[in-house]
Structures are given as structure tokens and as C-alpha cells.
Image (cartoon, rainbow, N blue to C red; front, side):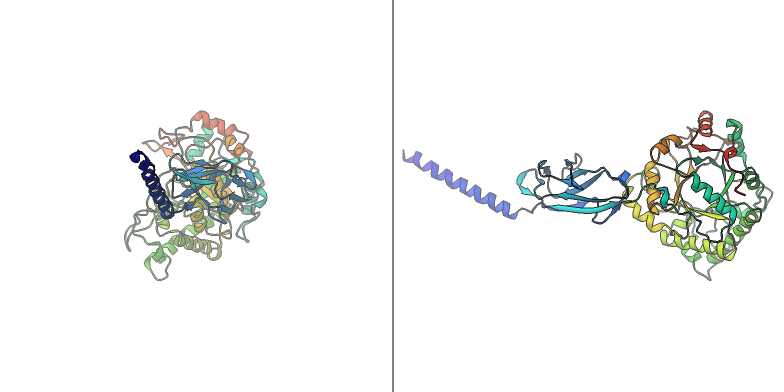
Length: 478
């Protein structure tokens, strides 16, 4: 009997010791702590790309559904991230141009292994950038001395913006209209816009390329079409070398080129003067030029989703500040020194398709400024013809909706009707050219980024009520 009486005492002592251990463990355990949040206080985010707030804690978390988490006063139901149980996901349905407050009461989230350990209260305030709003778009060109023809073209583009998109094709680098002719042969209609490239500047004039011959651009303009030029800017790697590449693997140094007294600076100034001479021929002929230099500078993102290392053109390989300086130098030289007032300036932004939101600030930092840019372009090569709202919204946000946005290069053309129904208003699309082994222009290739531009699809595009072809262009822009 004595033995039986002592057992409870022993057990009680053991329980007490365990309880003491638990109390001590509780006292020494780290409190539930918020480690990170996907939307910072005061941030500006894109409505279409921001579908949740992620709160990352230091424990496997659980949700008290009765706690009352709200977004602008409306209750929402958070969940735990299946891929990382330390993350709490708060769902969001955001509208452009709106301020938001997310409120999380104390105790709304807790340690899943110890419900007495709860997270503290949390509040974050942020806003969404303005979406597509035509009333925000700048109504005049950045060059106050722009020619009347340039003004007329810009006004026409602005008139069509949010309503229809212009069809466009890129000319062969031999500086001809073969691609436009092929589209016409196939569909019975010419594209409204044709693009040309000063890629062979170092060789012009010669028997196979001479930019003094503006006949292709004149033909397009005289038939009421619009003209755009770009520049794959080739440079030498070392002083005295032959001009060899525009790629970032060249040893040509953009920072040295921006410094007076260097051979690199002398080289770019001579090239700018030469390009200015050719553009002057177009101005003298009354032809306005939609001008897109220094394209795709930020090669450190890959447009297809994976991250790459470094820029792929020399004008981008030292980062955005050097590229912006070069843009401003080019603008000053062409406009203020060489007197070119026929240019409509298009700056190209790159839009990564992964981790997009975090690169918006980088894109804004790379933007030359509203006073140097008329239109923002995006180059997209995709294996589908789906709408590209992510890219459109991103580009629109860079200048806070103040600039028209265009599809400045593409392979497969996104379906225009689908785009407009999705809230996209690409000012034009510009299909890059392809050739066969004999140099003949092709409508499409087996490459997945071009394969959907079949003859049937081209006909559908050129007949679409959302697409402007050259025969529909007004004759009073001249």
C-alpha cells in the first residue's frame, strides 16, 4: 500500500519537471517574426501582375480564418503557401491607379506547431500605377521644333491609339521593301509601316548598300505609308581595327566613348554625323522618321523567362546610366547640332516574363526621361499569338501612362482582337524579317517564334478591323 501511495507523488514531480521544461522552452523560443514581405510600404505595383501579398515568417504557419484580414476594408481569406509553409499568401484583386491598405490583426497567423505563438498585427499601404488611360498620353512631340509631317504622324498615331494598331514589317538589311512586297502579294495589302536599319553604316555607300538611296523609304511614304529606322551600331574592338560587331563581347567601351578626347568618342561622333547625313536626306524629302536607336540595351534579362548574364549590345554592357548618357548625347547631336526635326523618338524597354515586378524599378531607372522619349517600344518573340498584357502594362508603367506603347519588334504577331479585348493598345506591330538559304524573304519559318505567321494568318491580320493597312492610311500626313 505504501508503494501505491508514493506513485502519484513521483508522477506529479515528473509532470512538474516537464511543465517547467516546457515553460523554459517557451521562454527561450524565438517569437513569431515576419522575415519579409513581397510588397514594401509605399510601393507602386502593377495591378495586373500583383495577385497576392506574400508574408514570410520564421515558423511553419497556420491561419486563423476568423481573425479578419482586410484589403481596403474588405475581408479576404489568406492561405499557406504549398511550396513553403512559412509563407502566408493574401489574395489580391487590384485596379490600376488605386491606393490600398492591407490590415492583418494580431493573432491572424500563428505557429502551426504551437498555436499559442501568434504573429503580431501588420499593416502595409501601397498603390497601383495608372493603367491604360489615353487622356494621360502626351499630346506633343518632345522636340518643340518638330516638322509638321512629324507632328502629323504623331497625331495620327495618337488618334488611333486604343482603337487600332498599324501593321508593320522590317525590311531586309539590304535596305529594300521585299518583305512588304511579299505581304502584299500574299494578302493584297501593304503594311502601314516599314522599318529600315543602318546596320551596314560602315560599308555605305557601296554597290550592295547605299543609304544615300532613300528610294525604298520614299516609295513607302509616297504611298501614304510610314517609315521607321533603327540602328544596329557596329564598332571596332580596338583603335584602328575594322568595324566588327555591335555585340557586347566587343571590347568597345561605351564609357570611354562618352569621354571627349578618346578615340572611341571620335568614332561615335563620326558615326552620328554620318547617320545624321542620311536622316537629313529623309528630312529634306519631307519624310518623318519613327526613330528607334539603342534598342534592347538591358540584355541582362532574357525575354523568354530565364535570366541571362549581361547585355548583348555594347551600348548596354556598362549599365543604364551609360546608356542614358549615350541616348541624351545622340538626341542632342541629331536634334540640336545636326538640326534633325523629323524624328519621333522610340525607346525600347525589355520586359522579363519571370520576376517581372521586381524589374519595374530597374526599367524606370533606365528610362532616359519624358523629355527625350516620344513612344515606348517592347520587343517580343513568343511561340504563341496570345495577348501580351504583362508586357504592355509593364511598358505603360515605365512612364506612368504618359507615353504610347508599341510592339517594336516581334516574330509571331499577337492576335490584335485578343489584345484589345485584354486592354492592350499596341500602336503598331513590327514583324522581323526571315530569309531562306538563298536570301529570299519568308512569311514565316519553322522556328516556333515565327511559325504561326502563316499566309492564312497574315491574311486574317490584314483584314482585321483592328489592324490598319497602308491602303487605309490618310493622305494628308504630308
